[in-house]
Image 1 (cartoon, protein in one colour):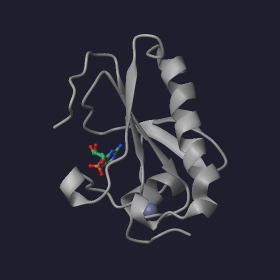
Image 2 (cartoon, helix red, strand yellow):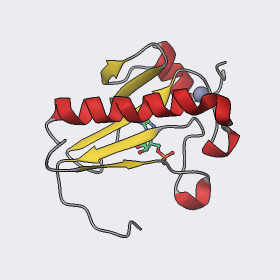
Image 3 (cartoon, rainbow, N blue to C red):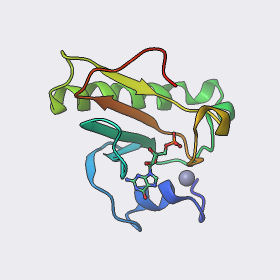
Image 4 (spheres, rainbow, N blue to C red):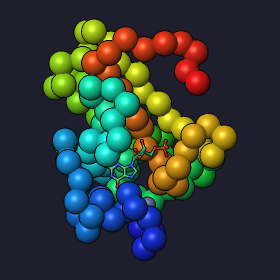
Length: 116
Ligand code: 5GP
Ligand code: ZN
């Protein structure tokens, strides 16, 4: 369920400190160490899954839970109405650098489109 060498598994287990924003039975949300917006929160499943490519239909509820958490946190951060972005990078070409799936929740500033 967890990977001994995975940074985000260690954060989920409390073995590495992080600025935890909110937790649920199946996920943990914490502030990104290198924020790209005034609000930049990462929402991760407690279960180790390397990339979105590794997810099957049995994980639909787990994935949905990450986005529902993002919605709740956006409201609590005061960015629900001004707008926010949820980003799921898959593999290195898209910018994934930590291979434990995570939703980026970004808001608090205007954002361009398309993303880089
Ligand atoms: P990715 O590039 O995989 O989509 O996103 C990984 C994110 O994890 C990056 O935005 C990076 O700043 C963040 N990150 C990397 N190491 C740490 C850490 O030790 N603590 C926290 N809170 N965030 C981290
Ligand atoms: Zn992991």
